[in-house]
Image (tube, rainbow, N blue to C red; front, top):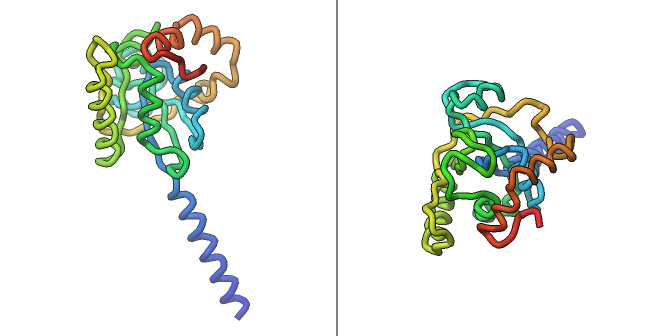
Length: 199
């Protein structure tokens, strides 16, 4: 009897753990330098983890040198794992818009080239519907004179970047802050949206 009871309890624990894991969702965004995108999303309540990486291209397991060489088709991107009970995918999309310049093609701030394009990599029909509705609302608002060129595309395999890129803003705060300021990211975002996501 004790063995059966123990087995039942273990089964409940396994089921509960599986349910807890299923209670998270994943989003993928490309917004220029992945150090900055990762840093921005880490401030959002409900975000569990962020991973810098590469996606949207045709080369498996690319290196940073390959991607920055602009021949892989990949964009610097960030995979965001979040708790949908604390923050919705729609809220993350809205946050993303206000952390980028959606009017510049193949460039974000001082970083130029296809790896620095902006994109929302949607994982299924539900995410696509949310992203497209958000884009339509933004276009309708006529916030910008220029056209919005951020892509909404189906997610492709995501390849985590090298370890030294992960949490770069925490590991190398002086270099990171110097880069971010020098690149003009926050100044441009504030110019476009009225405020920076970091303020």
